[in-house]
Amino acid sequence: MSIHPDDKNWTWVLARPCPECGFEAGAFDPLTMPEAIRANAAAWTPLLSGPRARERPHPDQWSALEYGCHIRDVFALFNERLRLMLENDDPTYQNWDQDATAVSERYSDQDPADVIPAIAHAAEELAERFESVRPEQWSRTGTRSDGAKFTVYSFAQYLIHDPVHHLHDVREGLAALASS
Picture 1 (tube, one colour):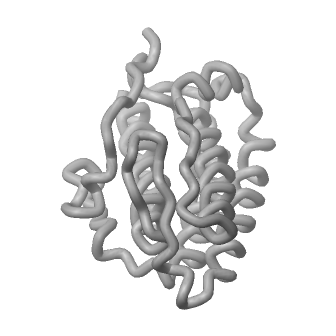
Picture 2 (spheres, helix red, strand yellow):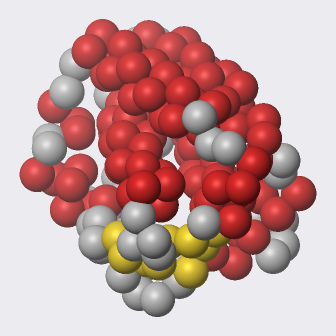
């Protein structure tokens, strides 16, 4: 069974806690973004080092490896989007189909030993970019291709939910595998 494409507009996480993972993105302090990104990246190492990293807990749910590849790509993509926001006036981001990327990049066939340092590298570049944000830049804007508008501040809050949420997904999935 293949993964059902995620077509939700996740911007609602800025207004209320996520009922699945419990994270409150709107309460997150973007000034702590570099530390949060680095901590999240480090949390992937044991999950991708385990013997079941390639196993899907359910046929329609990504494995820890597939989620790890996704997070690596999220960190890289959002680093580029943040760069655009800091260097340009109200840039518009091209749409990114995460499900198509998972297929075209063959997430399930990648080597966890390669993905672990790639997550760390992408996270470090993103963390450093957030460290470079000056106080007056937090209000700079960017627009997603569907019209959703972000400031650098809300962009950080929106972004951090994704890797936090997927750590939750993976931990639940690995627990389900362990109990099966």
